[in-house]
Length: 296
Image (spheres, rainbow, N blue to C red):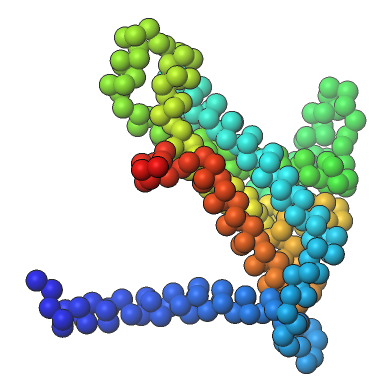
């Protein structure tokens, strides 16, 4: 039986971790919310006064912010679905192939490459003059593309890099889930005449659905805070065509300005939008029920 003294000793043991958590997480988050209601700008004197909702209202008038929101939404609507489909396809097709273990290891390399290395590498691959991508396009009679020089092609390039790096994450989770499916159910399906594509479509895919939905949520959360790929490839350019929400907040607060108040408002809005989107997806996909966490 746990005595009162043991409880006090246990509390004292975890107290440093609790204090560290408050200092490193709770306090900065609370200060960010407070700063979003001020005109705090480290590049100007006599700032830090409460200005109410002005920062939040200014976001809807800021074309750079709106452009960042649009590109972030584009990444969620294009990159995430492609990653999910590609990861699922690879996890299904790779099974029972000759050299399956080697292929599995190769597919995971993009995910293990540091963002700085991957971004720099793709920047060289997409180079207009000596990049291999344009070289191969020229072999098929296609004119060289200024990948990072035009808004449309720059957005496509960033989407390609995002999909290249994170489709392996989806593949890894779904491949592991496929390997862990109950063999008795699969064997029963085979006895009943299901095999190949039919077995996957009618038995394996429904069993994978909870893991698929959770992976989808993880990818949506991660894409909403995309920063490193943009930083290493386009730096948000040309103009603000490839600037994500997180990257624009960084530029406002650290890169070309020190407007802490406005940058904090951008971060708070991002958190609110992310929470609303994730909660909506959770309800629409009924993830609680799929995982057996809800009786509804």
